[in-house]
Length: 494
Image (cartoon, rainbow, N blue to C red; front, side, top):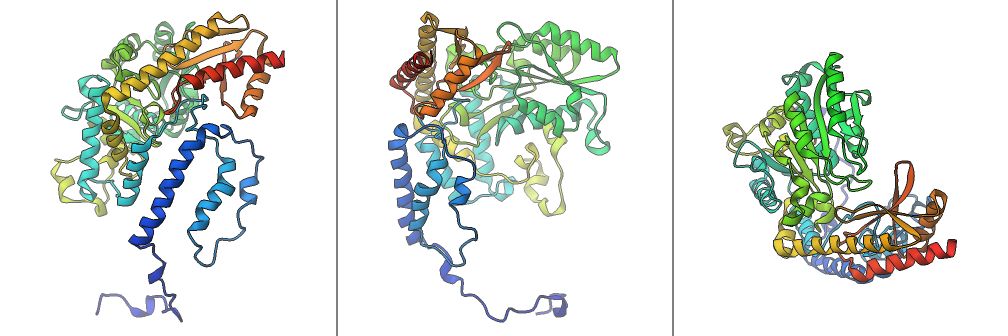
């Protein structure tokens, strides 16, 4: 057939062809091996409580156990699970352990795991509505569900000018918010002519480092990110924000973005959104609110105080992959004006053009994120919501908060330990009264034990221990045993 190509320009035929038809895993083998993998995961969850929480292997051990070269021929699948046990498991820090109290929860659950399996099995590339309508429409609908479940302001639902999208993380959500804010502030000229050097952004000194990183990526520069002083509860001071904005305006700069946080990583601090929102409206700043972990708490009406003032925000995000039993990666990112986000990020090469997009009747989520490609992540969130129901999710959030507050009362009553600040939700910041060096040694000893895993922060230049209650399988006995171990270890070090 003449296809317009000169045969001399084609690569030569190989001397011999490798027979590859039998190399694929057929349905029967997939079913057989899949049962083994599910059994392996189920067995893991049955024993994870007994495993050392923090991996203690030395650097390089995992690579040293792997072959220098990839296999030349196919290997039997049975070896894969054996190598998981022998090579990989010693290098795993068990984030799903009920004794994991470090950093923040990074939860998954049975329905989430199975939803991810379906996502992988379908192998959908959901960049356009046309490339799998179900991928887009389920995501839009489930994000509207989440808006109702958290009682978010109505402007964040898809029926109006706004809407939600699943990002991989709060870091990506912050970057998208900053890009949209940058373009809105410059009349959408930065994407064409480069970044206006006068732009300046604001966040508190306790804001997550992802905002600083996003400011760097967006071309604003770290020197143009103002870190605002915090109060005794480590929340942003609105008076200091006002002072800084006015100084920058007087200097001929262009304030364009501020990030408020509900639940900072260090201490769970809650920035005062009503005051920050009023300042944002007065000066035309894009207000982005990061509720990465704590947003989940708003499932419960009694914890919705964290969102007071959210109606003044331009964008908001929270992570079901932290405290809502949905495996990483799953960040719910909402905007009040989706047109600003889309206009900041859209680009349409000829090979992506299609009738549905040109009709304007569909959402193409490629325009709501930095990458083009996207997975069918909404399946796992959909299944988690349906499996637990709103009532089930509320039960677990309330229980985690109750356990954290009970532990806080125990610490407050202790003669040896002090509570650094009252926990608003599920993160306890505390320290031994013996001082920074003792607390460092205490933390090292606790984590070396393998029985629990904690992390630390610095608050007012003091070394503070952090204990976060939020893992899927964490129950009251785990918290009590952690507190007993902390006291026993401290006595042994004294």
